[in-house]
Image (cartoon, rainbow, N blue to C red; front, side, top):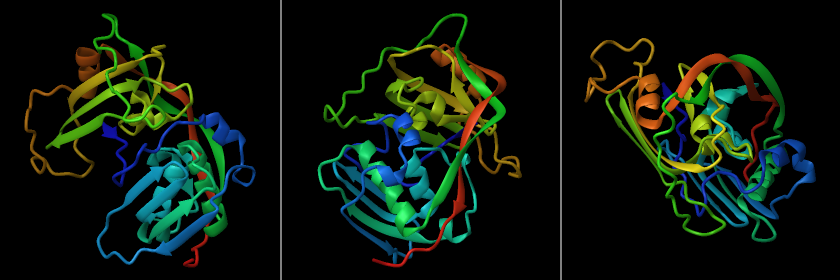
Length: 276
């Protein structure tokens, strides 16, 4: 069981998310959408590997960010759904970006402007592809859901707070996520429980039909990483259940294996930018 963790911390008035629909991002090419009026892109001089994103109305600031991370952010996808022509520098080189739109654009328009910036400065060309692949479907278990209604209170009315935390102890993971949806009508996968999870590298597709928000506290034992020796990462609680049992016992949800559509962003071309 893997969680699609963000590879850099997000300090933001809102985290990378959902104020416009994913259908808007699909239908609107960067050339037709909003653009940054002023943008600085410079290769990071920080010798320490790190990374930070700050998105506020009308502004995107990124520090020590690899291009692959910028693509994941701009197109709001998980790392396993990015492929194509990705030279080593797209993950090894890191960049500092400070960009502003003309007005106080919401998060969705800032991310559309980021797509245009990547197109302009990195000569990024992508296409999308749907593939039929093994997945897990998230359904309601026979006994019904065991999650209380969501209690996350946004910091600001139009800038929602995710109310999320994750704790790893050996191979035992606990997530506490208040106010989370099972799926998002706007299509922003990783802001939902189903989009946030992968099981044995399979994505999870929501089939619960649940439309509200819920408080999720989930504790389970992850599988060891391939090639890891027994005992290298000790269990802090050997009684913690598998992800399959934990979902049913703790949340009243069930994971069922099947095949379903999985969308990929495929990079066709990219170039190193010049500092400006």
